[in-house]
Amino acid sequence: MCDRLYETIDIDTIPNNPYLLLTPGPLSTTKAVRAAMLKDWCTWDNEYNEMIQAVRAEVVALGSRSDAYTAVLMQGSGTFSVEAALGTLMPRNEGTLLVLANGAYGERMASIAQYAGISCVTQRALETQTFDGEALETRLKTDASITAVAVVHCETTTGILNPIEEIGKIVKKYNKLFLVDAMSSFGGIPIDLDALEIDVLISSANKCIQGVPGFGFMLFKKDVLARCKGNARSLSLDVYDQWDVMEKGHGKWRFTSPTHVVHAFSEALVELRLEGGVEKRNARYRANQLLLVEGMEALGFTCVVEKSLQSPIITSFYSPESQSYDFAEFYKRLKCAGFVIYPGKVSNIDSFRIGTIGDVFPEDIVCLLHAIDEAKFW
Ligand SMILES: *Cc1c(COP(=O)(O)O)cnc(C)c1O
Image (cartoon, rainbow, N blue to C red; front, side):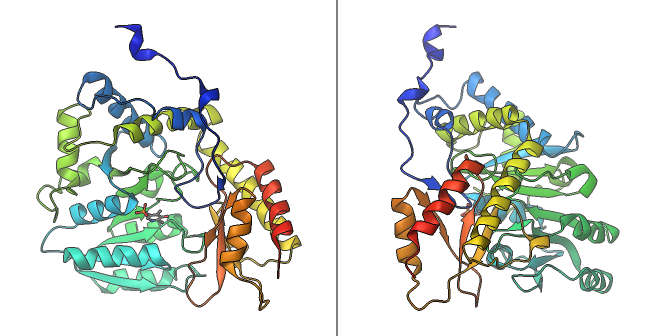
């Protein structure tokens, strides 16, 4: 092949970011990831399709050592993939979905079910607490109509980490399908799909794998997806058909694929491997988060979620009680200093959030803490 195709881009020519994103995604990516987006690539030739196949195999390998799973990529933000997965998993006129909800993303799954006309019940917990296992077990024992259970792993609303190991055990004891929204945790927290017997796991390009936004992906148990033909309520969001075309076409997408984003994602996967894989990335995120909490507590802030339930992904802090505090002003000052934080999302608690994922390192957290100390105006 002609060398022209492989002309490399000088990373030093890639501009710096204006600030560090301390958000749950889109998040700060590396220059190499951004550089991967500087060329326009063909979508239908072998080279691109091989890249898709490699990406699919690699995301499966991040969570499973068996060959029980397949990865299906789907255009759109993460919610599109959640909607695609639910709408394809649940048969049209049978079965009930139980959604465990302790935050906005759990509620969103219930809302998706409602739009799609999927029979759905919810078990709720307070946003700062996780689910009562006994209540779940009683529900599954007594309500035979339930065929599937869906839960969010890291509920990004608060940063709480739901115990999918314990929940999965109960779900599987009653032989229900188990769907996990691991959008903000997959790639940053080890998840063993084989051990947890997860039927569908959903994540996206722009969270812990550290790519840019534009598509999501689903890890489906192959034998489960094989039974889902004809279930989908939407043509574009038909995961079975998307899978069928990707399999038969060896990496072909049904409709226009986000080529630049896929190239960036492929580079992000290389970087995840170079970092040492999910365990190593998890160690970095944990180090970021521990340093953040230690520093914030020293500055007088308090965490919303108790430490035993807190994820290393994103942390909610109570807003200062002072009358002169105002999030918009705090945000503006930190942005000028080079850090973008996130508004709070917990109902009934005035809070803000700081993410610790992305191309972010403990030394960045040290600088952030210094900037927060300087920004204090209340
Ligand atoms: C980010 C996220 C989603 C998807 O959100 P989009 O805005 O559609 O990308 C879904 N669930 C969780 C838990 C998330 O953190």
